Picture (tube, rainbow, N blue to C red):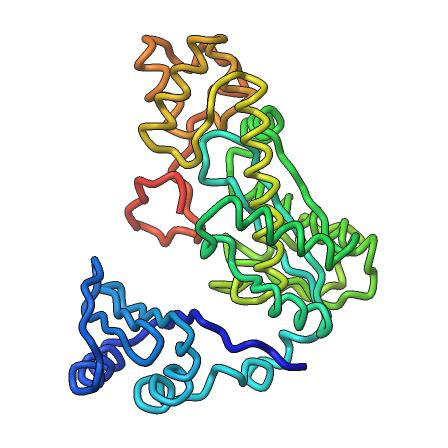
Length: 342
């Protein structure tokens, strides 16, 4: 099947590879560009190459694939990757389920876990659509467009587990762990998919904690499936599709809550979120947070303190404040993160 050349690539480079790229770009026929947070940025033949201080290199433009194939791979990466994805990772084309979630780091709105089924024909169609990790898609509009195309492609071969704020707060008060809730949600998403495709042999998700947590939560249908957890699982197109479907449901969910309660609810857990929460409480009452927000966030205490209130006004489901969320299990004696989301 003919595929249009890609026009955007991102790679993480080692220090040696970064040095090799800088030397190559400084010595080549490239026009220097100014890009914030970059070590070097240049315009090449129909593409822009930017090496960021993080070590990531981004190549974008009509000539991006040629630069990657004929320059970056042989002279910097020292390996051929683009166009050889299926040779390097043949399992990516085999039938499997991808699972991902959205909303866990957002104070307002639901937490959504999605699963999506793929096989070789579906993967080829997804590549044509430009499916990729939802975190690499910058606008809600594009998320909604892609999700619509993915749902059309998959038919009923996807599932959504939507945990609204009210249910979320009840579950957190009981489980006291976001990882435990994610394990339960991932297991349910896999089980629900196996109701539709019982012969699917494998499920892939990002690594958020102990794989055994998900395995213990799986019921009869899921006990036999091979469960794979890996870092950056969104590089797998089944997981990427699930991430887009979960994000779509989250975006629509937070919009509906805002319309229901008459206050625009921002994403994340920023100062703007706190201001919206204060407005929400003034319009209704502190208990409105139980139906709109994830109350274990420290954001809840900050908001209530602005109004000279405490968690006592929220009752049992809002009484628990979380320890900072970490996607990976903490090592003993390690310092805890101060962030509630990734």
